[in-house]
Length: 128
Image (cartoon, rainbow, N blue to C red; front, top):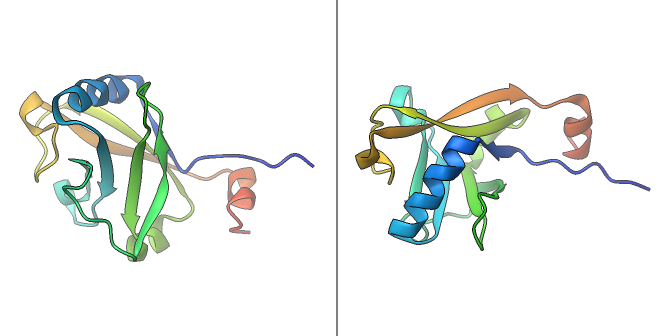
């Protein structure tokens, strides 16, 4: 029997290119999708170990940006309850985001583009 594989997260080519540059500067990176409002809901990118993942954080998936190790993406469990039917794509646009995300000094900022999971993805995730 064939199992449908999907990921809850993806990355655009532009964001992947910036992540490769930032990894060369800062070492391995990870994302945590913050739960604030406005700029506070941006995906925050940190060097691994700089942001402590807790037991209530959900691992959404890994981004393959062409490095030895994938970039892990997390979200708080309480926020995941609202987003569990959503696929997230990390993109980058010109601008300066808020917070301590490592792309801040580059003049670019990460953002999330979202869509609802397809029926097949929701089935694969055990949501239906």
